[in-house]
Amino acid sequence: MKFWLTKKRDQIRDWTVRHAEGAHAQFWLIVFSFAEASFFPIPPDILLIAILLTNSAQWIWYCLVTTLSSVAGGIFGYVIGYFFFVFVGKPLIAFYNLEVAVAQVGILFSDNAFWTIFFAAFTPIPFKVFTIVAGLFHINFGIFLTASLLGRGMRFFAIGYLLRRFGKKISVLLYKYFNIFSLLFALLIITAVVCSTWR
Image 1 (cartoon, rainbow, N blue to C red):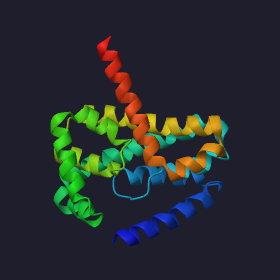
Image 2: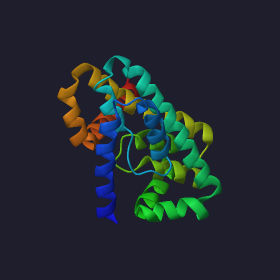
Image 3: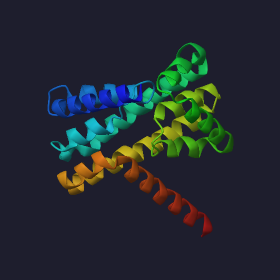
């Protein structure tokens, strides 16, 4: 299963790069962003990066579209977890072999739901796990929505800014080491929050 998913991810990544300059690039960006947050395995960052390499002047618009579409998909994932976990959510989790991740996320939610969802935007764990489990544990929807908007927004706008600033120079590194960049960015945020509380 893992080999199959990896192969499919590579094929879809190649497909997104080919379609990044097409007339329907924005449509596919919306679809990928929505789907990844609730049931799809491929993060929208791949398509966003490919689009911004040729449309860097519109980086704010494309990052906003990605953010809002991803949050909308997250809401759909929340609904799956809240109302349909047994029939839809549980089979999805099993299909992607994410049972262990679900248990870990459940523990994190019991500690602090807002920061768990917020930092979910920067972890290698698929965002769909957090959205579905948030619904399953009936996390306050206002907290879920706010944390999702902030976390996903900061993630995609950080990518957009880096591409606007450095272009192709940074794109290869983002493709190859995206998880590392995400975690480093999350650590910077944690450091900033901690430092601000000490003042």
